[in-house]
Length: 84
Length: 385
Ligand code: SF4
Image (tube, chains in turn orange, cyan):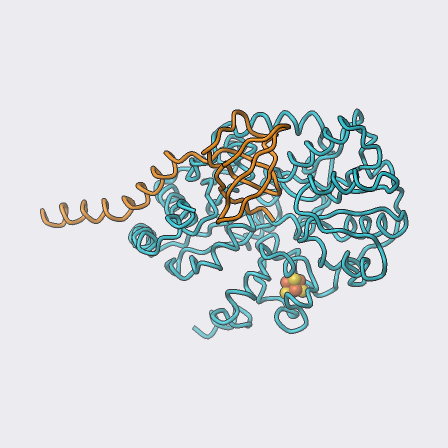
């Protein structure tokens, strides 16, 4: 019930409404809760309303951080391990 | 969708799992409470639990709005539908929750009440427009994510002059529930629930921001990491919590920066406070009466408040006697500790709310966990060892 899905805005309509594309399905949603929605934005959609914009920059930053979480530590360990 | 796939990447999951294994100190345990049912669901569905070392444990919290609604409020909704002959609109998750004497909305519907499942408050408004000579009541439940859509609906009804639309408001607040758990005697004195840190709600935080959690981190000395709902988010956030615990820090960190900011969605917040105000107290299933933990419709919008519009009788509500939902929602017991789990109580024949919603702990255990976590008293294993 709290799950929300990121969906891409493909059309803007009057009255704070927009059409989003979501896994091949198009859906009309309300954008009354989000400011300045533009075509191409990703929105977090919950019970027919956009709750927030999804930032693509932050998404790739998080992924990079996750990749680093292991790899970087491993390398560090190798370096310090080699010195002992 | 691009992000969804990447946040479920198996290779990346292994990398994060290895980091967790390396950093979790073998001499201690890490008890992480996930407040949100969405996290519970992800942990089971994607097998996140299996990727964790033994000493990193997830404690399921009360964060499923269907699960925490007290039977009394559900009985009231059934009564509004049956006695007052309204069209009662509700989110699908509510339909099968058993009320007193196992009576659910779906049973009331089978007996002739006009109850309709809606996906959105937009649908409820449409039903009101299409049926001008009927009273339409929206049975509103949910945390801070579903509250703004209800606020928008009330404002919209006002704007259109839809006099036949009203809301039975049951919206509840996450931060008050978390502090209530931390102040509960189980956590404070008995020590039965050890919580070392919290996975903070994702979508709730997209609305209220990460700032409200700063108070817990300080006041209760517990780290909070706001975590996304994808399996990798949950793992990365667990890693961030483990690091904080190891370093003795207790701060609010945000893993879900692609959606959550410190201040949240200000537009949604101002709409919510324009339409709703705090209730001095509200009953939660599992937590009892929690002060200032729910919202009601402000006097200025009284015309749209179903509670003022429809009277309900003061009848006695009762939960199924041996259902352990209350203890499960406080993190004190596991679904497998319940006598009814998997025998009388299954998703097809739910006895309690935790088995109904896919975000409830019992449903998650049943659907994804029952084969590897056999029904048995957990003590037996420890005593034998
Ligand atoms: S298994 Fe069923 S009866 Fe037992 S606690 Fe869960 S929902 Fe309640």
